Length: 478
Ligand SMILES: NC(=O)c1ccc[n+]([C@@H]2O[C@H](COP(=O)([O-])OP(=O)(O)OC[C@H]3O[C@@H](n4cnc5c(N)ncnc54)[C@H](O)[C@@H]3O)[C@@H](O)[C@H]2O)c1
Ligand SMILES: O=C[C@H](O)CS(=O)(=O)O
Image (tube, rainbow, N blue to C red; front, side, top):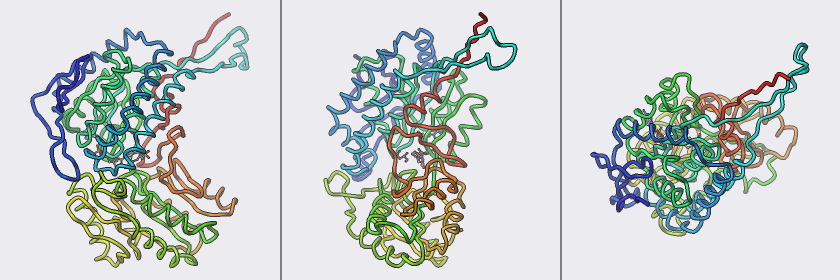
């Protein structure tokens, strides 16, 4: 097998690693040291990767059962190499060790679920005879793979979100050209090598590394790609939608997740613990991390006090240490931008109830109160370890404020009133409403995806396979 040499990843095309001319360093996000390189794939490399993926698709030889076996075998190898893969994420993403291990475990489950779903891809019988004039017809649908899928991934969950794209795509019988996030590419390249080791034949997964504006853009412009599956920022998502014309797209974009804690909450301590810890997960760099917390007035002071107490227990620092809860953000620039938003809110009357300090790329877990809907901390996606706690009087007021957002990915509600929970499920305009847990809850097999500027289409292996296949009607004249 042809391996990537040392720690330099070029493009993987038809089983060969092809080095590009421009070398881009990949940094350890905590220490700043260079831990590897990618080379920027040129337009020619991208064309060659897509051409090879298309040829492979046309000569598609992988039976459903073989796809199942390969995905299951890859899951087995991931499990064997879990510690090494977790450390790769820790170093290139700055994610703390326990969360990186959790991400590997989730990604393994995403592969297993995709393998299982490969065996369940099916159409349905269509009762055409129900319409007059069709008495002598039989009909059914097939689900057929779309062809070459362009997969573009973000930096924040570089293993599991890559798994959510490549595993269902392969399960459905497509071929894939993957462009990993340039800030955290090593883990995705290792996944590609492991898939080959698991028996995936050449050309089913090609990888082009490089910057979004170059390599990513070349991919978008290649008309031979039938569908794009993208996770990332709303700005790039909009660009992809407007560039790819009538081709299929799945876009998983941002959010500024609201969470409502009503005065009938069963366990206020649990709600405070979950809201705070899941607001700081991956230093707040999760699209469903808790950002806006609406708390009913009667329990507001108590909640703030408890939230501060939880925040005080958070260990900040070196992500390689077992007991660290928050490591660095992806870059000093990203942390400085969040610090700027905190300062701006403070100037406009907000109070920093906890944290707010920054040291390089490490931003302390922060709690802000007395915020206004117009502040960036509330109306934009913070994507940093910063939560805002906001009092409300009536539940309708809370629903209204939660919905007052350009985003609609997931929301959380804490209440012990079943009617109120059902009302929340009906009223909150989000792809997912999580009752008695936080917006950050995600099981990898559930349908997952947003509305409004949070995107289009669903992930979760079963649902991603629906997106990644076309429905073909077959009509038989008897
Ligand atoms: N909804 C979800 O499931 C979900 C999950 C994770 C992250 N996100 C969102 O992702 C964002 C953070 O991730 P990020 O900073 O890596 O996002 P990003 O949009 O900057 O980058 C994502 C990917 O897009 C590529 N890209 C950039 N410009 C491109 C172009 N012109 N053409 C093609 N590709 C291009 C990048 O190289 C990268 O691989 C946040 O907004 C977050 O909410 C959403
Ligand atoms: O960043 C958003 C991700 O979708 C979070 S998770 O990996 O799905 O939990």
